[in-house]
Amino acid sequence: MHIPDGYLGPGTCGFFYLVMLPIWTAASRIVKKTLKSRQVPMLAIGAAFSFVIMMFNVPIPGGSTGHATGGVLVAILLGPWAACIAVTVALVIQALLFGDGGITAIGANCFNMAFVLPFVGYYIYKMISYNAAVNSKRRVIASGVAACIALNIAALFTGIEFGLQPLLYHTAGGQALYSPYGLNVAVPAMALEHLFLFGWVEALVTALVVKYLQKHSPELLEESEVSR
Amino acid sequence: MHKNNNFIERSIMGALSFLKDSIFAEEYAAGGGFLQSLDPRIKSITFLLFIIQVLFSRSIPALLFLYGLSLILALSSGINLGFFLKRTWVFIPLFALFIAIPALFSKFTPGEPLSVWNILGFKLIITRQGVGSALTFIIRVAASVSFAVLLTITTRHIELLKTLHIFKIPQVFVMTLGICYRYIYLFVGMIEDTYQAIKSRVGTSVHYKSGQNIVAWNIAFLWSRSLKLNEEVYRSMLSRGYTGEARVLHEFKAGLKDWLWLFAVAALSLVILWMA
Image 1 (cartoon, helix red, strand yellow):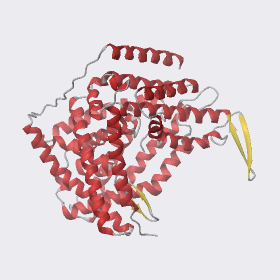
Image 2 (image 1 turned 90 degrees about the horizontal axis):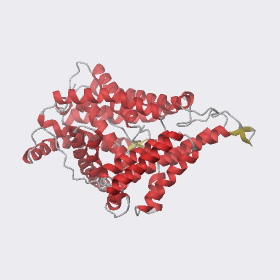
Image 3 (image 1 turned 90 degrees about the vertical axis):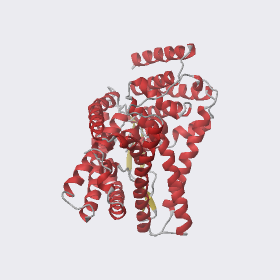
Image 4 (image 1 turned 135 degrees about the vertical axis):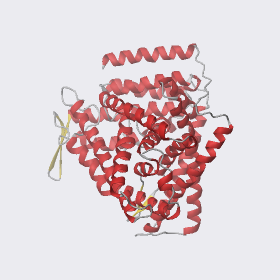
């Protein structure tokens, strides 16, 4: 889901930086207010954690492997605003140092993966697990459902961003200047692969991790949240 | 069919290749080439200008010129061209090449026919607009990735993160990025150790359901260790004089060569943006 440089036009890149600016500002203010001083390194460690989640290859039937993005898991563990900062930091490091995701597309990538993904996932999780005990099965189901839906919504946004490019940027002769496929191709391409494959991997990993935390460290599901 | 342990191999290989790539990049960053000799702040600004030029360029010759420039800069910085091409083309531009292929055809990009193919009764028409779209897309992606990788491998990562303060990014973010960067390596090391240990215990194959549980348990355990680490990191920050205010040390010095380079790239940017 990481959008590289060259896929989005300059206006789209600028637009998403502008959209993310107030979100980053609000996230820093809220986290600064709620973060206890001893939790300061937690953001950096949370960011490193969200960076490496993608390195865990998950076996899937048929002998292949997939990986989760962990955006919703980090939101459940840290809260959505802290997750927004942690995932942003991970995305900036990926783009600047490891070439994963474009530098000009950092705004768009953060919108999809550090804003839409953790916020949608967190509130679906909270809604389904409302009033449920920490060790209840409903929390496990809630985390899986939230992860699957949030990833699909984030993928849908990514598809729309790709699909708008030929409409926004083309030559007089109809030649696309950036991502070459319109909404009718880009949206189904992004949506279907996430609906049938990646969404399930995300749901499975998130639900299993929550299940393990319930069993072995239930306090981590409540205490580690640094911002709500 | 439902038994495999390639998720263990892939995780180990992923962790090892991450560490190996980082060591290579640090070796190039410590080299004595042209880009390594520039002030990291000036270099970051000029590479951002290059990437913006690539973003705004609308013609294939302009994009090819910028891509060629990235190769010349790589050579002048003592970077092995084979290593650089491999590093920049795998995976993003190759993937762009793959997804750009359907855009050649009239089904996706209607326009003036350039070539007509008849395969098994299906008429495939390659259009001029389709070829233009695909080429513009691939060269733009390749040029952007080349400049981004060039900046990354000719600058020490920690220095690159420190330069972010010139873009008015709050110090607390720069400090968080720095701490995060160090802990990524610690965590990658932990993942490698954990999977090596799993590999030595599971034998030749493991059922995919057990594999999924192993992965989930490891992620959960990593989180638990992260929280314990937080306490230790905070104590070590306090012992080093942390008072709640983030301070980032930087000892950069820009010389005449740096300013001339900035002037040259800024002038080129103006020409390219004017042409676009």
